[in-house]
Length: 110
Image (cartoon, rainbow, N blue to C red):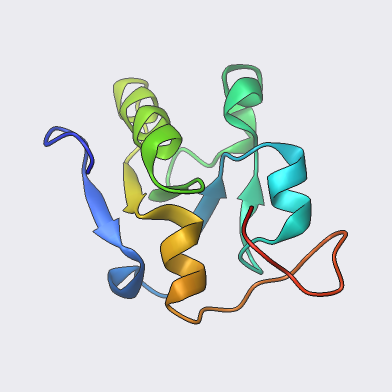
């Protein structure tokens, strides 16, 4: 459950064509991720903020929603309009949404 002051959305309520920022670590990303997601690990975010468009809403996702909630709060405090994806990639996978993999023959959420 995310903090009440962090805006969140469920996977099923994600608007189409949104910027999905995946903040999981490289091994998690490689195993399986959303097809059009942008990958910036949480540990690298502060040094890579220039890669995020300031004029577009950002939807932040991790494995289960904890890291992405912290990143959402950070981004909102620094001028972005960010929303946490509740349940993260675990909810994405259980909802039957598409997954692609950089290293596995069968994409999976780890």
